[in-house]
Length: 108
Length: 477
Image (cartoon, rainbow over all chains, first blue to last red; front, side):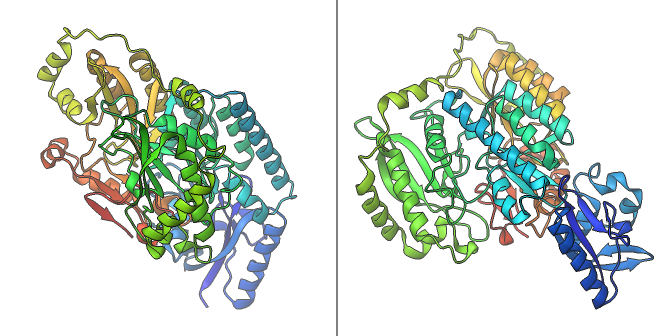
């Protein structure tokens, strides 16, 4: 199976977040825990449901990614835009806060 | 401008208080997202790709300088310093925090604004002609009836859970600037042979993946019967509109599947039951609301002042801007001014907080404090003396608000698309930006002339607003 990560929106800020290896939530896709097997995919999915139940996040869902080094790049452009920020406003979103994201994720 | 009465104020502040409590319960974990989502949507709060999005209603697109300053304040203090005017005369903020939203709604209520029914399967903000009350030749100021519809439809107990959202537009001019044929119901105010005021009623227009033009429902509904006729139409839709498939749930599909004759018969049957009920509009109430829309007392302009003509002769850029952005006013010596929010390479409809403040200041200085939002994602100052146009244009230019492109190819409207919208599957605004850059030369645009281009990810879009696609060209995903 292809690699997957788990993403959601933070309940209070609404911002895009990713489940990390420590089962915490980070605003950077660079920190995302990567699931490489069916078992790991089930495990991150379960973590997402738990966080939803505990009202930490909204809309948890898994996303297929390709790996460039240790950097997870979503295969679908919608998820790349979520990870990076609006293409029409490069001054806003993760791309404005985290240089590695602006450098590693292409949305065109 | 309509002013809230005691009922309006109490209604809006109560609603803010209720939503504050709902947000607190959500943050405390007492409400799940499934329970909270319909509550936030009924208050205009979406969750989009990057953050929450708050859509604020600007009823029939009319607002004033103080309200614009409040919108600027909200953009600056709770968002990222800008707002986005939409194709239904509303404004959206793309980055608010959930915990701040009750405070934002409090701020809005302080200037008689709100976000109620800017989402959900209910009757949305009734839209109108942005030149209403200023243009010559209107049968009546259509905003009077937009306001009456607003009051009738707000929290209407029967129409809060319709099969899908429902959009009404009203105009009173032969030249339709409200796109009434692309709404669920379009109303054209007109007078019959006896000189009595009434409305031609059109039904079943819309956009999205199944674009349709309205069909005629009734040639003439008397003024006093407007609400009972609307109620009858909404009842037929509520009863027979499809709920099994959201792709088929708009009234345009019902009209298409059943045929306009059957729909008309059912509406007439329903109307016969309620025509002379409490829904008949009392003349004194119409007159009371009419007083709010009499507009500012416009002092006579100095018709001997030739400075406007001289400036047009001497300054070619000013003359070009006038040729596209200035329209004739019902009163001699006055003009209607379009402020384009379509600078080359910018997102259509975007405006910074600083620009909002500039528009507010200029509207007070030169336009009696009145501002309109248009369905084409621009702004309007409806009452400006022609002798003030040159200095107004100079001031607008200092704030990058003097693009003279109304109706030209760079005056595109576009949906937010995949850059913000959780439902989109293609980008729209980048296409608009690239086209506007390609036609950056304003002289070339003038040479091409009128050319309206609307961009949406519409072929997949259930939610496409009524005004985005029926133009000279359209582009879908």
